Amino acid sequence: MKISLVAGAAVLTITSLAACGAMAQSRDTMQIAGSSTVLPFASIVAEEFGAVFPEFKTPVVGSGGTGGGLKQFCEGVGDNTIDIANASRQIKGSELEVCKANGVTDIREIQFGYDGIVFATAASGPDFALTPLQVYKAIAANVVVDGALVPNPYKTWNEVDASLPNQPIVLAVPASNHGTREVFQEKVVAAGAEEAGLPETLTAEEKTAALTAYRQDVVTEISGDYTETLARLKSDPNTVGVFGLSFYEQNTDTLKVATVDGIVPTKATIAAGEYPVSRPLFFYVKGQHIGVVPGISEFVAFFLSDAMAGEGGTLEANGLIPQPADKTAEVIAAYDAATSL
Image 1 (cartoon, rainbow, N blue to C red):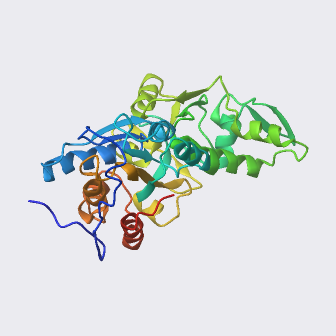
Image 2 (image 1 turned 90 degrees about the horizontal axis):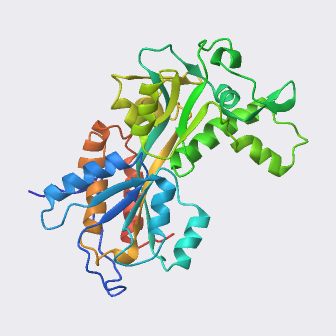
Image 3 (image 1 turned 30 degrees about the horizontal axis):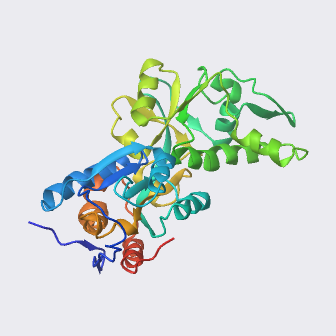
């Protein structure tokens, strides 16, 4: 039996405003790719969608990171291009330019909730109470010491700050193909560097390098999904890994989470805006495929329904921090109006 698709006070009336004649399309299964953070949520919705709507085939959901998914999304319009890109950050202006140059001119942005970025360590290890400044001093290739930028001298966490464990610095962070990396860079590393006070004599190019160049001796950049980061922690218990909160919550038997600026990352602290390293989550719909590849608008409506993304819904039970109902209503209205970026 189909459920009533209601989000807050807004009834989902998402229409299939489509360019049905925009392409000759034989594919009847939605293709979705992108963010490893959004992957588990999209996979759950896809499976439920296939069960609730047997007239449509269950969407195929892949990973590849936010950057990788948006690259596929922007390759063009047609049978061999994906319909939806999952993203843990907003699409960039440069990506929009590529999309439009390749004929992808109807791009619908769907924000569906929030997630936090956490630092997790082996459950058997010591507790970590981190700040952006400490993370910057541990991860940056060059750091500020006595007002000058020098090669990073720190080998253990307690050399960075005496309050931290006497443990070798080993970090596993998302590679540049992940949206998590960009949020981590902005809200942790760059914030820490600002607090450290980069020398004012640096050129713009030198400042960018100081903010973005990570150490090669103790930092592993993970291009795969969070399971690869988890494997690093299991092989080396000294590793501090960067994860999405939802993934951490699925692995609390083997992981413990660090505080950031004294705040424990939880759904409540993220929803309240107290935890400093959080972000909205998105997926992007190729409007030119709506009404051509079957079920896209129905999938969007189902994803945004109370039963899936709302308070007390299936995705909240799996780690999503739901967004306010009025925000969801706003997203729905923009989609129904065929509002494109």
